[in-house]
Image (cartoon, rainbow, N blue to C red):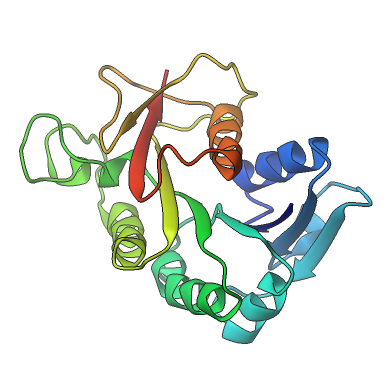
Length: 206
């Protein structure tokens, strides 16, 4: 399998690349600053590019079978601005499967019907800018015909996979407080081989 990983130099992105390489898949690691990717493998192709450049996205995707996006948010809304380019490139190259890393803020509130977590009292965040960027990206996916899955971690400290996490469709598992970077990457990568969560958000926590 040829896996394109967007945001490959980020915390979740790097661990996702490591898992895919460990299973002997071919990985195209898309990064703006490739020198941040401290990995070497004959199965690894590092593609330097900008996710806001449609040609870069399309060229990187040309030989891919599946897309994993570990892109994060920034003050310029790069995440939501890049999604249309990603979707257009997937249509061009006839790809259907994309797994993205979101945030627990865009899951449904358990306590307030019709609200996202970041809009409700469940969220402890002082600012909603990041959640709104993730929400815009999710809405693009929701309106597409792709086989998408949005993995939505709660508080995300560094750490290796522990393996005892819980997942739930569209809401955060009850009482969930944190999930490691390692387990978030492990679950996201596992969805390359799993279609149980097609066209849904997935809350993940311990």
